[in-house]
Image (tube, rainbow, N blue to C red; front, side, top):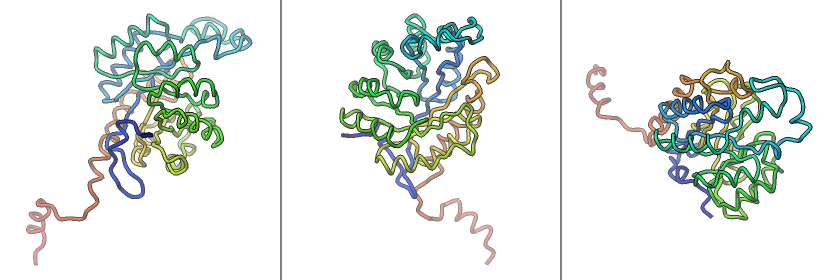
Length: 295
């Protein structure tokens, strides 16, 4: 099985680890649109102008993902006073996804979504998306893993909240079904303190599973995303927000426009500045040497 995505096959072979010549950058819109298709389009525009490769959403069937007890419990939100009203207010349906699909085609950026249940996965098939995503909370959900792997579409598997045993099971499912995947190092805290990022896990996941590895971050700065790419991450995914002070549990763990622009710029610069590692004297250096060496 070729376990690489197209973007992960062209690597700069450098020590102590290879660097992806093009690291896929994913702008995770998730539910930061707050149920408003116009905000979703603003976030798509932000990702496009920041030179991201892809935008990502989240799709849930509310009555499957949450118990009746949870849905009936109180929660104040712009949509009402229960968890059900809040979650239904954040969930896009057919009409919104038709608009998202059309708008992404118009502006020229790919999109996909993480399905949190099998009916949501089935719903997303109609858009013929390039990628699937296993969200960290869903990694132990074996029936969902099996359904995603059966599609044999390149999949991103986030590893937040999960043990090596959980990851072992997921990797076995995807390899048994010959489905290409990237393991995404992730720490599921919102926002994530930088002393908990633990980027060395990228190296360990790659060593342990002999597969491409990416990074899905929830910190408030852009620095770990750029460092992850420097450590060989073939994918970097970050939540994005128009304004981190907006309503929503993921807003504070997101990058605003300038942070996103900086992260993507730094990631794009890494293969350029890495060079080939061969020490040599450039023509410009020879000219400068003639001026500066007085003997």
